[in-house]
Image (cartoon, rainbow over all chains, first blue to last red; front, side):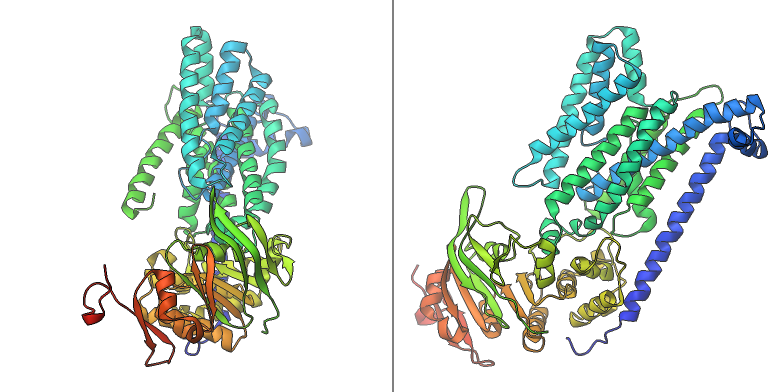
Length: 351
Length: 272
């Protein structure tokens, strides 16, 4: 068979270029959608701000021209909220997509394999038993997420980490931690339960520099780390043996990517609470849009940010007199998406 | 391309968990030849291949690539010399044929190096060699088992290595494609001077295509050499616990193994 077919490198190059142009188009479209959502988040509300005033308000710290009322609403209320939504959504989306690609399983996002539950159990413990709030509470949640991830990794280790074991052990740990949370609730006073529940649903209400600062710093470190390590994901997708055969350092890369993914989820959860399903849906949506069997880390970040921001817009403005926590909307949206994913995967027979 | 690379096992022991599969095995891969490893199920053929290709760390002994311990070399460096096609690779959902084959170029690419003309050329050549060029823009999911297997072989070819190790590459293929794959591997050895090691189940194709045959039993090397010199009725009985007649293959003159079961065997039926 070696003789008959022509060797046509041009066709391969064309195919490659065609696909990278498609990826660029999808990326730009996602960026545009995010920009529109961001503008809506600035403009909409009880006190509508027209676009020209919005620009003036955003630039007011530089220009010194001030409309105190508008400036306050834009700079101190809406801007921090939208920025926190974008950063946390991006972190969740990237984290979920890392885990799903690495573990070769669409169910393997941090909110399914126990990492969110680890943060939650720690946070509920901090609220109910220690009476903490604010920054110590966030640090407690962070520690809980990291500790859970280490436990899952250690228990899944057996001459290396098999993706399948991580998912199953993660689900088991998540169940244990949910039981711990339920137990803590039985020991708590009603006001504490209310406070803990608010944290568990996840919300952007407390948006301020104490939430945004640490998360932004974490992203500055973790996003480049993820992108540097992501090159090996292209061959890790082919199975451990194939990846090794192609010269990837499988265990080292996997550990690095897992740490990055855990840290992303942990910092985002510490900032906004375990907002349900954002990490879970971002990767699959990005993959649907790109239609390719390749890692989709950057698009998943954009989709995560759009999901969080869009869900918050719905949560704030969908019902006329009521403002919902963002986690209620993402929970509903994510549950529907999970059902759709299971149905379509069941048809294709590949879950 | 000339083969200047040597691969050898010295006192190699391999195993999983607490089970030893291969024990104290010495073997030098003949350069510029097609070597076929045969043996019964669980005789350690695949384990030996995984050991030789550094996918499995030795319990004892060493694997030497160009005289140096393969585990002391950087795995990326090894990947530019030796290509390996493991038994059950995973194709990501939705991946296109050309994209999958292009991943064979991984060891030749770096953090910031974009795919180059060399990469495109290697992918195109690998697709042409495996007769898959017409499928370049198709999703791998949509292919038949045999076509998929050829895509994986194309990926290993795109890696462009002098040494190529394949674990049962003809599984899932019909007889026509089995012969094509073995013809292709023979081309690689004869015209490109590569060294190929392959695990095969089909004894007769193994005898016909092997320059050098290696028979394994219970983790040990029972016999090795040219098929016509080593494959005898006694060897088949020892390695496969099977009564058989060995006659000259009417096409190639190599040994042809004709099994004798309990039925349909006339006077020569094997005793139960």
